[in-house]
Image (cartoon, rainbow, N blue to C red; front, side, top):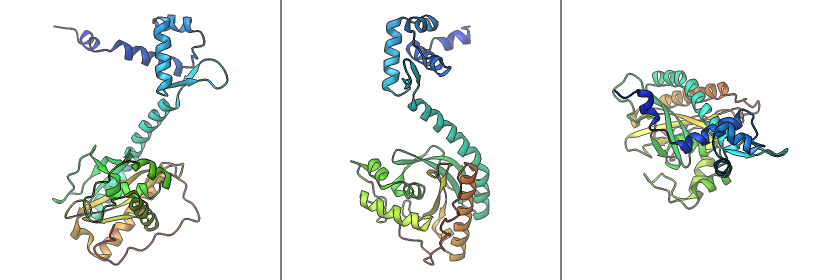
Length: 281
């Protein structure tokens, strides 16, 4: 029988392994000032080392040290690590809070983050009802057309929105979907003013939802949470008020746990509109 270690070893890609070892070497504080010594330490030839350094520098995984010769870990690699840690933290923090929201309002609750111009679902919690959402963790939905995406966009700068949708055709899912970038800006301003993004079957027929943004220590939007369910579940004014309050409370709690500092002069929450069908957004 083939040894499992040998079997795994047969799938190793040596060029990738050499690159990883070089990154680890630099991350441990070795600045690669002496090329020959580094090549000897990593057991690769000097030409290969130069090619690896050039490639990693182009990709932003390593960069020249500002104070002199040698290399240090690049911002692209640090960004990937930071996003990985963030995703783990926000999921860990959000799960119990979203579980409580789902059970309290008897609607499916979700957490999503922005990836390009899409929202990626990281958490899904459902109440013990037959009308629970069937969306899966890992699903990607267009930010401009969904409540979680809209409320994140609501807290981005106009320049960020312009860059995100530059040259893209915005798919429409209903008459309420933003069809142009100026439409996205207008919707973002409205959602930001409201504090909650509402949808009355604007993305999926028969399904309504509401979302609030989640912030971190920088004060920027790093995620969003929402609840979704049958349109009838959002139709009663008192019911909508409960959804509004629970979402805002949950979003605030998650944000505080991520290091967000609430501003003393923050605007008070706006009352839910009396329109049973929800704002036309």
